Image (cartoon, rainbow, N blue to C red; front, side):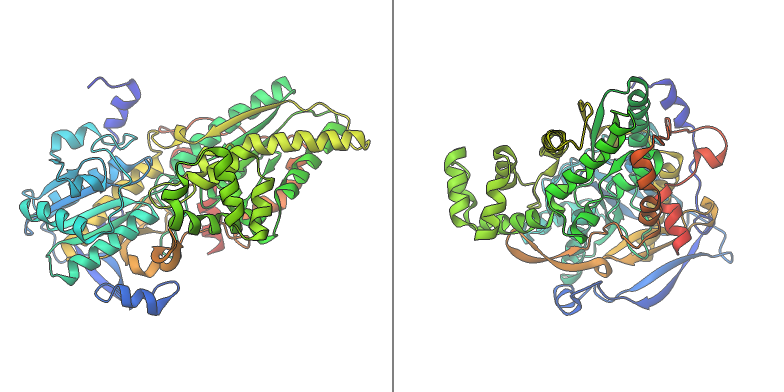
Length: 552
């Protein structure tokens, strides 16, 4: 395989490990845990894996001989969307199980969870692993979005796990994928299958975190990639001084990416979905806010600017959120009936069957947006908000509002727009040094959980703003993160998403400065990710993580 000059050099990069993982380890149990909400319901659904203790790893200096443990065979799955560093998780897992015993073997199931069900796999040998160290993407074994939720799938997967004598399965994924991991762990435990299941926190969206998980892997790299792109656009914007750039950023269920990128680049406007919901704002309120900034800058002769919009914004507008909730129930019950209706028939059917308030909201949406909210769903039943061109919808409405202001004598400027969606550009980048180290450590740590013989746990590293050697390894029960939510018309156990906290340090920092950013041109240009040089530049974590550490 031909490699770029950078890839050849990155091959030689040796990720650092926490000190506790550099020798033999002992497990220290903490207090029993409970789910973040709906404790009785979650306990009933997970009787074998609920209430487990948190685990901490400590180095066993009385036992310095490594590689003499019993060999373990481990399977690994990449699940869901790509995130920088996934390959390093697998590399760390490989090195970790080989440190237990050189005869340990690792099998990768191909193209996501479907590889387990369909018995498609390959053994990951040292030659394969070494080709992918410190690289982006998930192409080592591929990924997919198949949900693991049916007994038939579990039993089919168990057949190949038994055939390969696999002791444990590591699922690398986001909140939905790790929810599936918890369900699988519970089922295999209930039938004494002898196969443990370990999860790993992955998502560039940054919404898989809690009091123990400080950040999901990939968030650091992706936001640095987007920060560079936004900075490049802002430099062009400040050079030509004739366009307003509306930039939509990935982040379906939370605005962590938008907030982090705003802290990095200081745009004129950044909308935070959680604030929109908390203040019960309408789409018109958002439009008025942006139009007001445009007008104030125009009064200073600045007919240019930048606006950051989170991908999932439309789901956070309270009226639209209520509409989507009712549409979800309708689709769960009537999906087959409405799938083949043409645009006119679909609109009439939906309006007839919605409640009065939601029908009013639906009727006000542009027809293309309304149809997308009605039909487009991902395998987990979520609206595919990335397909909704929110940035164009909002800029169009801002243009209309500015014309109204012009007629009223409140605006006298020029408003020309450019549109961008920064999404896939950040998912498969070479991982930053932070993510390269973090992911390798998560994988190596997962091997420790496998050796410990536990199931239903997520691999964990803490104190991530400190030097890598001081990171604290361990594991937490996946059930600890769960609550009950309505999915496809039914209440189901899922990992609770972490939204932007409006009383948290990152948002407070943003809120304290945004008024100045709005009127003045305060752009920052982060530039590309740096892999070589001083640690304070190359190894620094995200601004979100640093502000949250100060808060703690």
